[in-house]
Length: 273
Image (cartoon, rainbow, N blue to C red):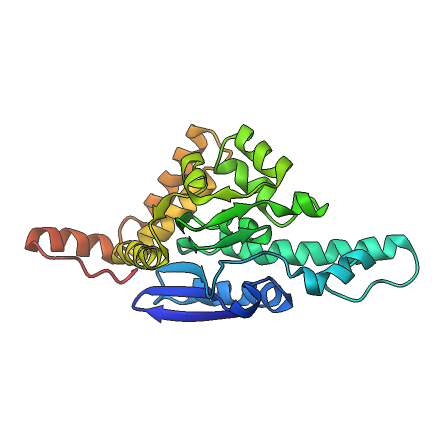
């Protein structure tokens, strides 16, 4: 379900189940946390692109697999025998595991870019809202489809989408579950960069990730940490956080390299130290 390709300092995480339009089955939910941990820990990786093979980014939760389990009161493990409380407890544990998988993307210390083509439904929206930026081709279509399937989206969309688009737009997308074409998604701010077709998207995502990777990984990852720490804080608290971060990290080999490269009029060669 998940494969990784590396090109220099950029890793592409592929949703790799094209025959099922990358429906999110057990392999996705079980594998994603470990893959993101590996990419986050790898010092050679400075940026991550999440993309889908085949005709769609992802059609979301694998309803063929999970439909019977949802009806039985569980999504991952075996339905709990006995009381309804036991079944609900098992379902809660399954939901928390899925939430943790998506949060592993948000928690990655490296910038994560979503490159979306074709369908991005349900769990796909959960996934892309955990990314730092969202790029899309003109054929992309987005939907918080859980609403139409009698489910409250529960693994990331509701807390993260309001940080990306306005409250009225969130209400529209969540309450209707409608399909949103790429140009409208771009206008509302869900998509940051829009490309003419899938080939242009692939090139655009690779180029952007490479430009990010050219910078000091120490600084890029520090900037991501500072931005995240500032969420929900006052300006004064956020300024205190970045002041402490820079007091600890400013005197780096990368800063010395940046100054030397400027004086020598050459591109810097950053090491992340």
